[in-house]
Each structure stands twice: as structure tokens, then as C-alpha cells.
Image (cartoon, rainbow, N blue to C red; front, side, top):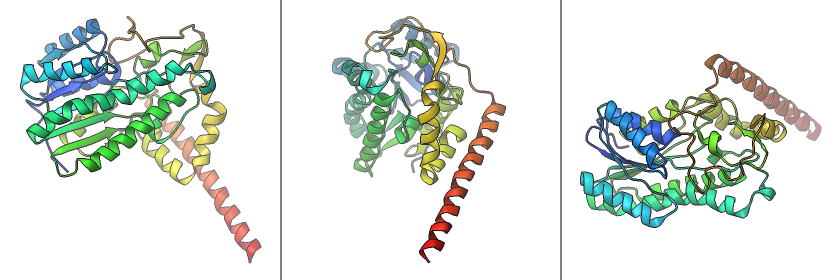
Length: 332
């Protein structure tokens, strides 16, 4: 495993930097001494981010662009190299969602989600990999989702896109073994980003993340840790992270039962909302900065939920063990 504990002077491109994880990751990387090239569709938001980075003593180049446009991707990389002479780190963080039952989602919503949340990562990786090979080093750091290892109702396109993105990243890691180019992934739980304030929905109600919700800075700090020690997959949350992975391995029926019965209700409020397009195809004015309207779940409530989920899992596993013993006795 490579170690780059001192990030000062390194150059990073951060996609999806106008809000959420991209924004906050850029800020934390700048605090660690990384020189930034930030990109997204909203230049006015990127200029606000640049002002924040400069205020903290960092260096930041703004390059407006769309991850679905090949010419934009290539231009961002060229401008970054022209400014700094190289690029050491790519943080793939651009993403969009669309809420609705699969059979009701417009096909163009499904393909657009893939084009941003999956193919956008691939486009930028293909654009920077030749630079990395010339330098003999580089780091692809992908902001993934816990949905890449799971699922949720109403988010079938996004879940599928993140499954594909994680599979690509894991394959690429094998291909790049021994080249000096590293691949890392951070598995993101529900976080307090503005994504839910500008995501399209067919439900006519305000969408919200599956609880519990974590502060976006949890992921940004994980990005910095991975930048220092590349080549890993980080799961920074416990309840909606490591515990869920463990439960899915031991008792997958628990998560399916909960989300299958309550998932739609958990992801919507009673607030009426007509937003069929959101920011899917065109940028919107709202939702600038690291955090959105949904606050993080208090730590004490996350702890209570952890105990409840552990008890539920224990009951399921205990019941399964009793059932297995009963079957064994019947067979004998």
C-alpha cells in the first residue's frame, strides 16, 4: 500500500465540486495543502468554492464543465496540466439521482443517471490515465455509495449505476497493479448534501435520504485519508456502513424486509413537490455548498438505531439457528 502522508504540493481534480461531497472534499484537500482544479456545471458555485479555498490559504483553478461531455472532460484535464504542470489525484464525485418506481422512470432519466454517476467517472479516468502513466504515478479516488453494495426502492437507476462503477473500479485496480497508479473507493452512506434538494422526483413529494443521515464532512475526511494512503476501500460510517455490510452478509433478509416494507416511506416526506427534471439535464440555482436542507441525524439517535438493528439481526440469526437445529433433528 502506497503512503503519501504529506499531500502538500500535490494537484487534484475534483468533479462535482459545486456542492456536497465534492465541495467539502475540495475544501479538506486544500487544507491539507493540495492544489485544486475544481469542476462542475455551475461556474457561479465553483467561484464561491474558490473563494472559500482561498480564504483558507489554498490554491484553486475553476474549470466549468459537464462530465457527460467528452470535450469538457478533456479540456478540464488540459487546463489543469497547463496551470500546474501535472495532475496527481482525480476525485470522482459527480452524481445525480432520479426518484421513482423503475417502470415509471423516463428512459432518458435512467440513461442520464448512468451517464453522470458511472460513465462520468470512466471519462475522467480515461482522460487522466495517460498523464499518470507519463508521470509514473497517480491516484483515482472514486466517491462511491453504500448502494453499490446494496439497493433501495425508488433509486434503481442510481443503485445500478453505482454497482457498475464499483465493479469498474475494482477491475481497474487489478489492471493497474504495479504501475504506480492507485485506485481507491469511499463508500458513502446517506449524507447531508444538497443532492436531495435538486434531484428530480416522480413522487410529487420531497425526497430525503434513507436515515440515518451523516454530516458530509465524514466523507470528505475519508477522502483526505485515502489521498494519504491510496489503494483501499474506505467505509467511514458504522451504522449505515460497516454494520450494514456485515448484516447483509449474515442476514440479507433483514435489510430487504425493512427497505421493502418501509423504504419508500423512509425516502419521502409529506411536503408536496412538483420537480420532474430537477438538475438532471440542466444546473439549478439552489443547492450550492456542502450541506443541504436535511440535517445530520443526531449521534444519540444513530446509537439507538444501531442497538435496535443489532437486536433485530440477533433475533433473525437466532431464529435461523433454531430453525436449522430443528431441521437437523427432523433429519436424524
